[in-house]
Image (tube, rainbow, N blue to C red; front, side):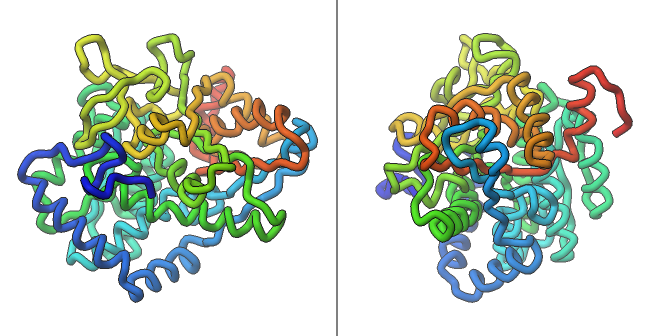
Length: 399
């Protein structure tokens, strides 16, 4: 992990803890608990057992031979997080944070969610652990991800549609943080992305690093060498930081994060934070955010409910600033085309979030040699997106 060891919770100048005093004590307790249990052999054994025997890890590293042949150039491998229990990478982090909460004696889990996958994963593990669960989700997202709302309710969670602000992910995080401030004695906030005040970005990095640790081992076993590039979509950045983690100290591996450009990076209807944003403080962290001329957080847009966040995790901001990772914008049109293409060529219906990464792989692979390799993380499956994509194409179907 890249961090500032003289100032814990910092990645260069990014990160930190910018929260009300009422939360500082709880964040300190959480940090201490994580530092203790992360080094605890029994905790790691329990977590590994849950990941392997409940979440269905290790996930497949799939050689997309037909797509590789069609595009020409590099060989493409998909890290199939869509095959995890609950259908996304989110369960990796939720299992870690929820098990930590259980060790801390918490009885109730709360979480924010955008596309709904983090909410589903949190509700799932709350059910498994016998804990109460409440999920905060922007009203706009509850409408376009109605299937996941019902899944959360079916799992026993209470879903709160958030009607403040733009009624999307950033507003759900606001509501969840407010609820945690009100009731942190018996409640754990399960942060879904590599965002928020320390220690959340650090914890999410560690719990999601299983993605790249596995992928590195799997590709070495099959090809004998590291990938030339790793590509993943970025909203707040949990699946991307998990995909990058094991390769951060391997300079030969190009790291590429794909942001949601929406209707275009130069338009107001975008969520391309790193390309369009600037440094600010929001949601308890110092990072890069889309802001208006007055420094207020700007409205964002993406066809993807999981990527329409006006900021990015502090580690990603640092990786961009130092040049260790590259971040590119992918439009709605490009993502939808990739969503349809991967279904037709490889028989995989991926999440629209992941399709942003696939779209960039379509551009990148032909520029590379046939003896080079790309790992692209499919962070989730696309069942939740089929009705929305059909509507985008002018076809009305029932959710």
